[in-house]
Image: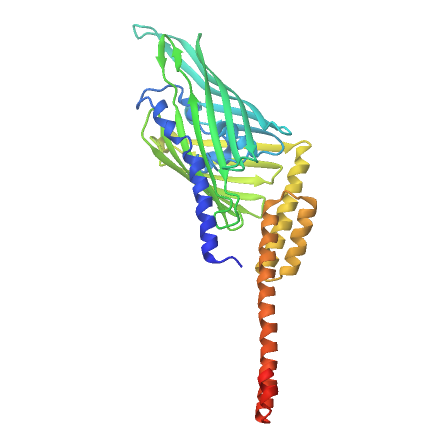
Length: 417
C-alpha cells in the first residue's frame, strides 16, 4: 500500500499543476483593464444555459456542455459527441433572449462550435432634441460566435490541458441606427489526472470580449472585458459539484461567483448559486434539471426584487456517431470503479483481473494502469512478508532441534543445528 507521505507528494504535484494551469495567463489581466463604468454592450455579460445561470454563473471550470461556447471555449475540447443547445431567457420588463449553439467534435483537430444569441427589447419611445416624442423604436442585439477547443493529451508539462478560442461578431440596432464590432475570447482548462483526493479537480481561466470597442451614434465605448479564474471539484462520486469563479471586469470591481450542483439518480439535479455582482437582486440563483447524458432540460430562476424575476429554460441534445464513443467511456469508467472497489475491499486478485481486462480493450486507460501498479506493489510486499515468515519457520525448526540435542548432551549436533 502507498504510504501517506507518497500520497501527499502526489497531491502536492497535482495541486501545483492545477494552480499553474490557472495562473499561466492570469497576469495578462492588467493589459485589458479599462477602468470602471467605461464599457458598453452589457448584453455580453448575460449568462446562458440553465445550469450555468442556476450555479451563480460559476462556470469557467464547471461547464460541461455546448454552452462552453459562451463560458469558456477551452471546455469545447472535452465534448466527445455532436451537441446542440437552445435557451430562452424571459428577462425583465419584456426583454427576451434566445440562444442557439452547436458543437461538432473532430477526430484529431478538436471541437468546433458555432452559435447565435439574440436579445430583443420591446418598443421604446423616441424623442427628438427638443424632448418631443417622435416614434416608437425597436432595439436588439445579436451576437454570432465561432469557437474551437482542443485537448492536448501528449503535453509534457500539463497532459490533458484544454485550450480554446472564440471569434465573435456583435451587432446592435436601435431604430434605423446600427453598429457592429468583432471581438474574441481565449480560454484554458485543466483537470487533475492523478489518482488522489484531488482527482477530478478542474481549474480554468477565460478572457472574454477582447476587442477595440463599439462605435454607436458617433460615440465609441469599450467592450466589457472579463477575466475569470475558476475551480470546480466533484465529490461523493460526482454526486456533488462545487464551483467557484473569481471575476475581474474591466468596468467594475473584482467579485466572486459560487455554485453547487447536486445530482440525484443520474436523471435529476438541483442547483443553487450566488453571483457576487448584483446591483438589483440579492445574488442568489436557483435551478433544476431533468435528463441524462444524451438529453437534458435545465431551468434557472433569478429573482430581481421589485423589478421582477428572470426565467431561463435550456435544452441540450447529444447525437451522432461519437455518441458510441461516449458510451464506451462510460462503460470503462463503471468497470474501473468496480475494480477499484474490489481493491479497497482487499480482493487483490479480483481487482487485478478486472483491471487487466480493461487494459486488454483500452490500453490507454491510465487509471487502470495505475491500479495494476499498485496491486503489483502490494503483491511484492506480500511476497516479501511470506518469505520472511517462511524463513522464520525454518529458524524456529532448527532452534527446536538444536535444543533437543543440547538437552541430550549431544553438543556437536546441537551446535550444527
